[in-house]
Amino acid sequence: MRSEVLNLAAQRSMFLSPEALELVLSDPEPKMFIRNMLSFIADDSIFIGKNEVLDFISGSLSKNEVRPVAPKNKRQHDISVIPGTDVTGESTCEGKIEDFSRFFMNRYNTIRDMLKKHMGSALSIDKAMSVNREVHVIGMVSESSITKNGHRMLTLEDDSGSCRVLISKDSPFIKDIIVNDEVIGIGGSPTRDGKMLFANEVIRPGVTTEPWEPSDSVASVAFLSDIHVGSHTFLESRWESMVSWLKENAKTADLDYLVLPGDVVDGIGIFPGQQGELSVDDIYQQYHVLAEHLKEIPDHIKIVLQPGNHDAVRPAEPQPALSEVFSRSFDSNVILTANPVCLDIEGRRVLTYHGRSIDDWVSGVQRLTYNDPISIMKEMLERRHLAPIYGQKTALAPEKKDYMVIDKRPDIFVTGHVHGADTDDHKGIRLIAASTWQDQTDFQRMHNFNPEPAIMPIVHLGTGKTTMKGF
Image (cartoon, rainbow, N blue to C red; front, side, top):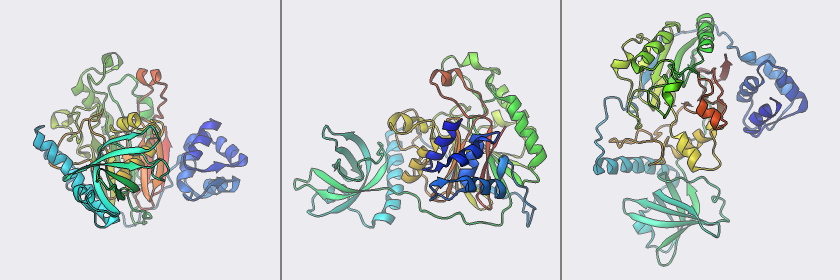
């Protein structure tokens, strides 16, 4: 446990004094304690001493309990799906070449417009390669490789043509993560023969740094991902403990919203041999059992439910909301949405995505791992795209627009899928990896992956403070 606590701090470039470490380890749940404390400490802090830990214990949300807030100016529920972010009922693709062309052009044009705000004017690739001066171009990466001399070679494309881009091994950008199909800006100089561009700058759309502006909202939103009802590893007793806690505390804590970011049931035929891991082997019955579990949640809580790769919707993203044939037994407080989707909850923009593309990030980028989904979420935000890599594990439907583009900066960004639990702040955006309610599976055991189950992240919509409540 000592090394795990130190690793959690080190992931945020923070270090604990021996006295501070002992105080953290004295808590009944040290990992939960350190996560909550780190979310309260300023990002520019490096060294955490005994006094900082004592200050947190005395003045913040200690022991993972939500401090009751006296209701003031309490409003009715204020939650809605932001128009244009939900594919449900809007899917028109037929898988034709024209669909794919339109899909990728929409991605390119949307992110190009974001990049121009940072770069100013940019030339098309065909024009840029014919001039004898420094230029800026914007294109989609179709190929990326490291040469035998340690340089990075890219192939960049736009609607006018393509070019080779060389990033020198001595460039400060050589260590940047660059993935296929992302849209980037390049500043550099063309060779005299117009066959290559020597890059001196790599530009991404990114997200602006903005402080969380406090509001008068007293409500909180919680996140419960990867429930996997129907699996024999579903942690029913811990789920029941969570529901009991909600019944006793949700109203006094003004916890008014729950978001369920996918894999709410285990599904049928998702992977070879799954049949032997199911306690409920009928997909309709799985959703019926889920509905019964959700009915135990206090009625005043609005529940947003979106699908994941285990749910009974198309596997290609964006995934539409569950159809009525599976959801007819849900109560009226359950809101069904697509995956991904953007919500407006009491004035906060919440981007919620199940996270299947994390598989492609991990397999495609050596330094990214399942144990650190937060770092992958930051890469998504900086590229303004949830799933840029095409043709891998994450199937993408060529809709009339690319719903995976992050067109506007969110206030909260949540993913599930990897069964890890963590939280962080990125340029003022609250990042949530939303845990799971499933114990370690045989597949995870075989790959030595240890999930962090039965943890409920809670974000206060007024203050932005985040708490990880364990069960």
